[in-house]
Amino acid sequence: MTPAPYDDPEALRLIAQIQAFYAERYGGGDDTPLRPEQFAPPFGYFLLGRVDGETVACGGWRRRDAVGPDDPSIRDGDAEIKRMYVVPQARGKGHARAVLAELERTAAEAGRTRMILETGTKQPEALGLYASSGYVPMERFGIYRFEPGSLCFTKPMRGTTLV
Image (cartoon, rainbow, N blue to C red):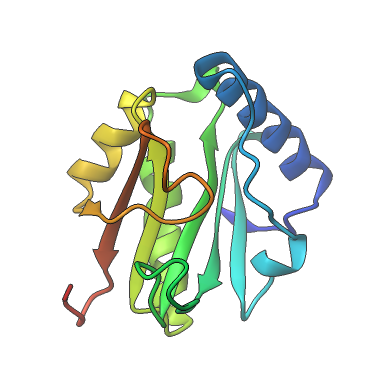
């Protein structure tokens, strides 16, 4: 796993694949507004996973803090996971779990106290990964919080507890 800018050419290639995957499963891409600087330390982190020089995985987190009554489930200290993806030919080999572990480690190191994420009902692979990694359901947040197929999860960082 190596850190990379969100707008690195290899990152952009995998992000385009993620968007195509979403379009296949949901009929459209993820429209969540994101900016590359949100994934640059100390506000976030983005990484690429490589095997034999080939980029096969990516993922990042961005700092999220309480935004007020419009989205009450986001709290100060949150780190939101975005753009986690493993190319089809590399799936089932532990890459997603390794990306997730590195995102959690770097978020905790940056002082974030809770990981949050949004996924959907049409991604059973992601749901299994997050459940087996200690993530629990939370109130929906973000631009898809009113969509029936949206599911949100959280996990406290080591040394903190969910309230």
